[in-house]
Structure formats: C-alpha cells, structure tokens
Amino acid sequence: MKNSISKEHLALIIESSIDAITITNKKGEIVLWNDSCCQLFGYSSEEALGQNIDIIIPREMRDLHHKGMNNFVSSGTKKIIGQTITLDGLRKDGSTTPIELSLSSWEDDSRQMFICGIIRNISERKNNESQIIDLRGIIDSSPACLKLINQQGELLMMNSVGLDLFEAENFRMIEKANVFEMVHEDDRDSFIDFNKFICSGGKGTLIFKVVGLNGTERIMETFARGHELDSGEIAHLAISNEITERIKNEKELLRKDQKLEEAKRLTLIGEFAAGIAHEVNNPLAVIHSKAQLLELEFNKLTKEKSESFEKIINSLESIKRMTIHTSDLIKNLKTFSSKSNFDNLDLVKLTDVIDMVMNISEKRCSSKGIKVAKNVDPNLKLTCSPSALAQVILNLISNSIDAIESQKEKWISIESTISNKTLKIIVTDSGGGIPKEIVNKITQPFFSTKDPGKGTGLGLSISLQSIEKMNGKFYYNSEAENTQFVLEFKSFEK
Amino acid sequence: MTKKNILIVEDDKDLRESWEMFFNNFGVDVHTVTNGMEAKEIINQYPLEIILTDIQMPLKDGYFVLEYAKSQRTDTKVWACTGQLFTKNVLENKYHFDKILTKPFDMLNVVEEIISITSENNANKT
Image 1 (tube, chains in turn orange, blue):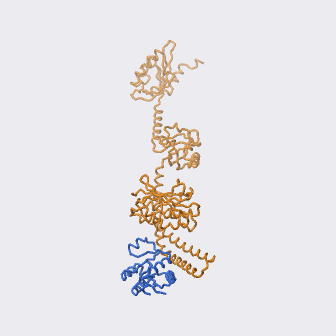
Image 2: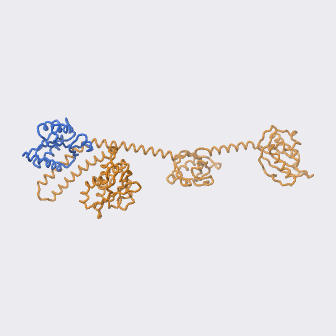
Image 3: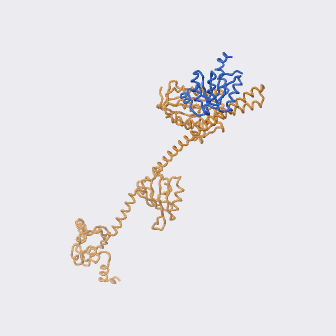
C-alpha cells in the first residue's frame, strides 16, 4: 500500500491543486513551484525555480522571515510549522495579496531538509470579511436601535445605540437577556403578543416603554418583521427609535389644547350665564317676593301656630331659599368664568378681608354652635383682589359649616403664618379630612358631595382659579389632622 | 292709606304687584309705572323722595330714569333693581345709583327700609 502512490501521482496531485504549493530547501531556494503558484504570484516555474523564496515575501517582512528561518534551521524549533498563518504575499508585478500559509518540513534520506508551503489566496475572503465589518460598522453607527429577538424573547443581537438605550455597556451585559423583562410591565403583554406575531412571519409597528438597566424609562417606537435564522427559526428583527421626547411634546401640546378648550368653554359659560341672568333673575324675584307675601298673609290669618301652618311656612322658606340658590348659581357661573378683576390687585390688610368674611358668616356659625378662632397678624398686608379673596375664604367657611354642623365638636380656625418668605392663610375645621378617593376631584368644576340643591360644585374650583389669578397657591393639606386648606402668597408686607 | 312720594318703575307686572302689596301691608300707597317714559311724567308731577327702578325696560330704561330724576331733583334717591349680572362697582361708578339691589332680594326688608327713611318727611306732611 505504501508504494501505491507513485512520485508521478504525487507530482500530478501537486500540479492540479487549487492551493499554491511550493517547496524550498533549507537555504530557501525554491525547488518546487506548482501551477497555482504561477497563477497566484505571476512567476512561471522556470522563473521561480532556483530563486530564493524571498521573491514572494514583501520587503518589510523579509528580515523577520530570515530570522525565523535561521532559528528554525539551527534549533529545529518548529514555531510556525504545522500552523496556518495569514500574511501578505508579494506578486511579480509588485502588488501584494493576502494569503494563508501552512508549512511542513522533512528531511530526506541524505538528511537534506525541505520545507513545503501550501498557500491559499484569501483575498476574496478578506474582501468579504471587510464587507462584513463595514456592515457591522453601519449597524453600530445607525441612529436607530437595531435588535434581533427570538421567539422566547431572548436577545440575539443589538447594536450600540440599542445598548445605550438599555443602559448596557456592552452586549455581554444583556446577551440572552429576556427582552420581555426589559419592557415596562404596562406594555409587556402587548409586546409578548407582538413578538409572537412577528416570529410567526408577520410585520408591524409597536409603541412600548422600556426600562433600562439603571431604571430609566423610555418610550420606543419599533418597526419589526420576521428574520429567518440559519436554524430556520424565525426571529424578530426590529428597528426602534426612542420617542420619549416626542410623546412628551405631544402630551404638552394636548394639554395646551385642552387648556385652550377649557378657556373657550369657560368663556362660553360666562356668556351664557350673563345672557340668561336677567331672564332668570326677574322670575326668581317674582317667586321670592310672592313667597314672602304668602308668608306675610298666612301670618295674618292664623294666630295659633298649627302643624300645617308650620309646614306651609317651611315650604315657603325653602321656595325663597331655592330662588336665592338658583340666582347664586348663575352669579357663580359668571364669576367662575370671568377673566376680569384680577388685573389691578390691591395691597390690603388681611384682617380687613377676614373681618369682611366674619361679618357675613358670624351669625351662621354662632347659630349652629360653631366656634370660630381667628389668629391673624393685624399688621399683615397682601396683594390681592379683596373681594375675590373674601369669597374664597367665605366659601371655605361655608363648606366647613355644612361639613361639621352635625358633629359633636364644632370649630373653625383661621390663622396666618409666615415662613420662607411665604404668607400662609390656613383655614382648618374640626372635620376629619377629605376622603383620599375624592381629594383630587374637589377642585374640579361641578364636583360636589353635598345634597342635591345644596352646593353648586363650583366653590373650590372658583377658589383655586381666583387664588391662582392673584399669583397665590390654593391647596388642601392632607397632612393635617383635621380638614385644612392653605392659601399661599409671596407678595405681602408687614 | 297714605300715598307717599315713592315711585316703582318695573315692567314686570307680577313684581309691580308684589311691591304694591308689600307697601300696602304697611298702609302705604306708592306710584307704579312700567317704563322710563311713564316714570318721567310722575317725576314731573311729584316731589319724589325715592325711586326704585328696574334697569332693562322698554322705551326708556333705568339709566334714563336715574339721569332725569337727578336732573329734576338732586335729592331724590334712585335705587336700581336689576337681574343683570353687573358688578356693583360698575353700576355705582358709572351711573351713581344710590343703591343697587340684585334680583332676587328680600323685598320685605327693602320695603321696611324705604318706609323708615321716608316716614319722617311724610309725618310732617300728614
């Protein structure tokens, strides 16, 4: 068997090899140069044979080559023998070409050493590789996040933009991480459905929120389609852009729109209220006066106060009350929607405003057994619309009276404090606070917890608007033990 | 029943009736008319102490009543009774009504007040 391959056969094989094959002696002189060598380097075998192998080694590599060769020949250390190395080869025309070289050596019967080099032209492969690198570069420098996710939601690939968005320093940090877990829980189910759809060959877009490794939330808009992997499995290939800022701007615009819409609506309410006021108030005046006349006449008719007489008087009372209430509602609507009166604010004594309020509400409080404590600095002056401020405080007191009149402990306190250059007017009553569920609604127009017909649901929303128009703040203090509202002003003096 | 120099200018028949009935309840008779034109004639005929006038009325309105009354007798008090939503300041500054009543109001109180401020003068006459 050993002799079944003859030298001629071997020579034929060498000649027909696609790889270039050359053999040199230990001096580096070429003793074999096959056809592929001729094609690769441009030297015919006549030209190459007898020449030193240096002819195919670029000049700058030759010293290194000689050193290695000497080292190899003298010591027999096979540093590169049996390995495949990549280097540049020099052509006859002076150009270089990337080659892959594997070396082997042997000694013949006369202990003569030969070195065989099998050389493969890898210029094409190199070219492909450089294209792949370019593609990588493009993917990485893409302004969008590019990612590849499998059906299980595992991350297979992500470019550097994507890594930045997910706050990962490198791909290893999130390789094979479950993307589902990086999607905000609000959007997780829809993302899982979307992934399933894409991985079954669909394509589409989705907007979802992601949470980075450091916890930053971002809103992403993604365009995705299925991408078949080598395994035949379809993965989810996506181009995603961060749209957090855009969504924020859109929301801001919408809010502005709504505010404008609200302003328009208020103007309309104001016009409506002004328009019907005269038409409604006249008949209300008639009803009120007639009810009062009936009371007068009934009182003349009967000297003894029978039960049915009481009922009649009570009914007339409520007719009168309702006419005033209806008229107040229209007045409130007008006030609520009016823009005026806040252009020229006055510097007034806070006690004057509080006294105005007390003057109106004192009787109502005392008749219901409510104690009113006033602790206001008499030297304080603030910039406000006194009537509007009085209305706000009066409204708070009216609310307090309604809320606590049937309680055992009944008190209302009005006090002023100054801290951090802020004047606070604090109105507290003995109530136990506003239920959490409705705290956010109390300043909404038409929100009321009072019995139908008792409140218009506009008091606190008007108050909020009024105080804001006076450059102040108005809020419910949920931290307080009792029911407490706070008015804050920056413009005041002592 | 004593006829006092009080004039009610009101285009609403029901309200006019109410005014009359309240005053009558105190034994007082008053002049009533339905608009500014009619008011002018009463102003010309009687030395009125007080006029209660609606603002929005046909022919001549409450502002006319105010101006005409004051031009004839500066000491005639003119009170406005209005259902319109003006701020009190606007009405007082622009037209110098002596008082503004916004409808609906406590008519019994108003009538009592008017009688109390006119009774002294009248006591001299009767």
